[in-house]
Each structure stands twice: as C-alpha cells, then as structure tokens.
Image (cartoon, rainbow over all chains, first blue to last red; front, side):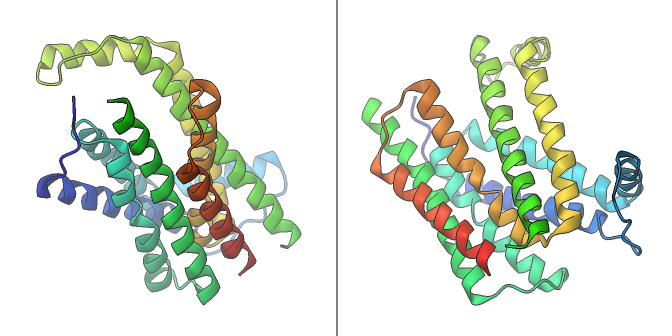
Length: 138
Length: 127
C-alpha cells in the first residue's frame, strides 16, 4: 500500500505538529526558569527541583501540547510515510531556534546557525535514505 | 567545552539513548500485534486494549518518562536552542539501531546524513 501522497491537509497538519513541538519545548524551558535558581547538590534537592517544575503552569501546558503533538503525529503517520513526514517536521529546528532568540533572549552565533542548518540537512538525509530503501523493496 | 557542559552533553546522550529504546520497544510492541483497520472504531479500541497489555509498551513508556524528567533537568541548565539541536543525535542512534537489529544495508545517504548531524552538533557545541 502506497501512502506517499502529500496533500495540503496533511501539510497543514505537519505545520501544526511543528508548532506544537516548538510550543512544548518553549513551555518546558519556561517551567525551569525560577526566580531563584535552587542549588542542586543531593537527591533531596532534585525532588525539590521537580516540585517547583510541577507547580509551574508552563509544565502542564507543555505536557498538554506534547500529548496533542503525539495524537497529531500518529494521525499524520497513518496517512504518509515517516520518510516524507520527518523532513517537513524537522522545520522545528529553525522554529525552536527562532523562539529561543525572540522569547527566551538566547543568543545564537553565526557558527551555531550553520550548525543548526547542517543538523537539519542531516536529519532530512537520514530520513530520506529509508524512503529510498522502501521504494526499492516495493 | 567546560566541565559542567560536558556533564550536560552526557545527559543529552543519555536522553537520546532513552528515546531510541522508547522507539525500539514501542515498535516491538506494535509489531507483535496484528494489523487493524483504522476505519473500524471497535478495531481501534481492541488495538489500544491489546497495546496496553503488551509488556514492551510499558518498557517503552518507562523510557519515555525517564527521558522527559532528565530533559527538563537539562533545560534548567542550558539554553533551549543548544539542548534541542543536540537532541538530534537520536536520529543517528535510531538509524544505527535499526541497522544492527533489522540488518539493513548501509546506504551512503544515511552515512552522509549522520556525518552532517555530527558536524552540526560539533559546530553548535563549539560556539
């Protein structure tokens, strides 16, 4: 059974999963930004750390969008091959980088941007290579 | 790389390995079940019921949660863009693991992609 046809509807779903991926990473990062960063030395401090994380609404928003992403992603994979879905979904590497700069005030040097683009290209290569294998088999 | 950064790098390798185990165990669990017709609601419910009774799926969930907790700890220590870029190494692990277990032939494209990811991670870590 071939399921490689990428329709506009599936493409929009893929964009949605990109947004959900970026949003849940952003929320998780936000949930770890405390007013006072606790100094972690022992196991008890680690429990305290997670108590602080769980009391942040950002953590629960992140978890919710992670679950939503899982549902959207499962729906996408039932329609198209992983090797088609992953290259489009890996757009989130750019999206996460942009959100980090714009909303988390992180700095990304030119060298790091080049690194991110290399990773993006590499992920596309790895996922397309399994597509080549499938098309030879079928 | 500073000493603290090396520790975080090690943790990211560990979460990536956890993600790989999560995927492999989930795939094993799903493979053990028979196919179902997605249009049939009764079939889908039966599929889910059988899925949660598969031990592989529980092992997969365990690795998923372990990875999630460590991931949050990592995010508290380093920039999001740094951690997220490095997390791409799980593509390498999954590709390697499926080659070893499924005995797939190594294609130049996969090695090329793996090389680009490694190169990208190196640049992100250096900067």
